[in-house]
Length: 636
Image (cartoon, rainbow, N blue to C red; front, side, top):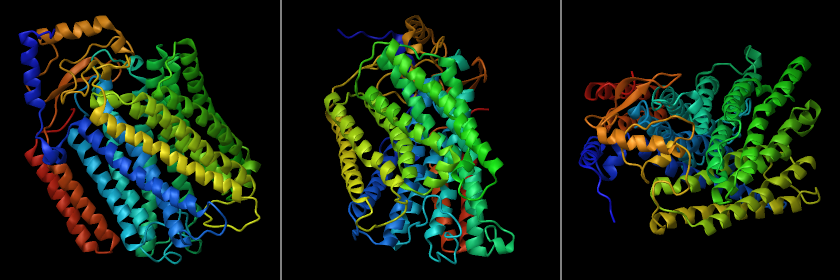
């Protein structure tokens, strides 16, 4: 028998639905500032880029399956190899973790109704989309980036590569960095200022600690990459000499600036995976996370120590012995906080009563691959071994066990874990477990033999090889593994699409998760929570008295905020209510600003500098229109 809600509750819900409603249809998606819709836009866009990067990888693996293959030529192979790396790092993993998972889940986990700056949030997505289209348009003229995802000079200079390939790379990453920085700033302010009353630091979900560490690392790491790309474009287009030894420059400047960004980037990629693991493990282990404060500090320490490790990518460049020893020690030190988390995960599962469903199985695969990749990473801290294996497939194996095994596996588990929350339907568990085993076996077969073939002398970035080098069988196994991995990923996609249409309807909390997103409906309403929730522990959904108090507050009208587009602010340390922030409504200005910026970057690419200046002027005018026609945005 249905239970009718009391009249005051119905009235509050109706007011909230009226205040937070956005227009329907395509126009609604173009103008939305709802963090959940923006998270879904990120999700589906990054999946398209993931598919593109996967196709590029399969083409390369097919080319390398046997000796002297001619599936693609060397020029095409270089472009595929470069765009595969750029896509997976800059257009899949980072935007999937911070843009999709971070956007959708962080406000729900901290009890907020939106991100701190909703329109800025929308702008970050549309700029990300523009940057992705900008980069991939290079394939239309057969001039995709072709010097590797790290784009080392002097090979990237104009005298060695006179086309637009490297210009697409440099301008595209500058463009994309704008979107990523905006998103990172927004997540940081949201976590600092919009936590529900009572959610002090010791009660904040570990996923949010991971996202905070990731966002802070992005804010401090991206400027080095952006400066590097600006220097490169100035040298290629205007004749500067940042990397020319004859004019006082230094080609190693590129490597230093790039790896100051790119080694923290490894932890930027992996930290959200840690956060997903710390969400899934307590739910399916039926136990709160062991050593909660240590795990939270370890997530922040990984990001911090990661900034002191960049030169271990440069042990073969002739740095002094003192420098090498320092970075070797830092490379070993970063293992400590990671190990703390591994022990906490394993102990939580061991002490609890685990249910090995698909999300937890993917986390188990993640832990195994992370340990394997971490052990080979420690090997690179040994300077002679690093120098002997630099630029071999041993490095490629280590990198992919970390980037795919340790970063992507938790994402796949997270897709299954939060699928019921996002859609209101349950996925097919049996098919999910089949997809896990296909993905697990495919990952192992694809990347583990790379260790062996690397020790046998196969260098990275070769597009073909001769018979008789001892590489043939290993490369064939890797290619077979790549296709098995693709089958596993396709099975996940099939499961998600079919379950979205035909899955069994579920309630708000099918897994009995511990964090706040499980306290609201599935899918969540536009306003997230009918009343700002009560928080007295790190797992508020398991605190039944607090949830009962939320119902009483809703009946009384306390912290309902149903008269306007509002969310409460709180103090940074103790999350004491401090103000009420007015949230801006839907707006067309973010997509307009992003469109003008995209046009400007295309004009910079083709050296129409005056027209590019005009396009940037249009961007400023659009920003002025944004400020003139909308209320002041976000938190104060």
